[in-house]
Length: 92
Image 1 (tube, helix red, strand yellow):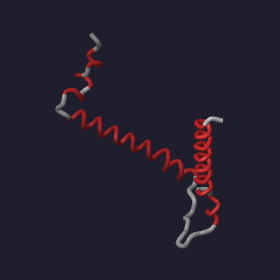
Image 2: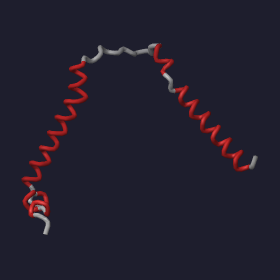
Image 3: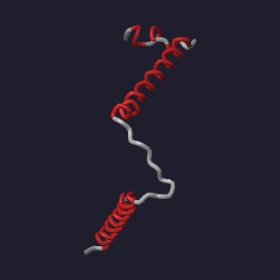
Image 4: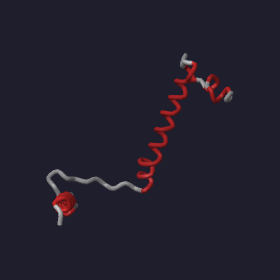
């Protein structure tokens, strides 16, 4: 076996062992015991979950997009207006 193959095998073994050690350390085995001050609240209902993680981001996106459109309309910069862009005039 050549020296290069041996180095690669040792390197692969070290990376595998390190990865396995990190996985074992981050396992949820110790999550069953409560820590001091750990007081979980009530769970979210399906409606609350959908509202928080689906509806709220969509509403936030629409508000930001609307503000950008309003501010672009009021801008003095002609590049922000749709009638002055290259695509609105048509390609020549």
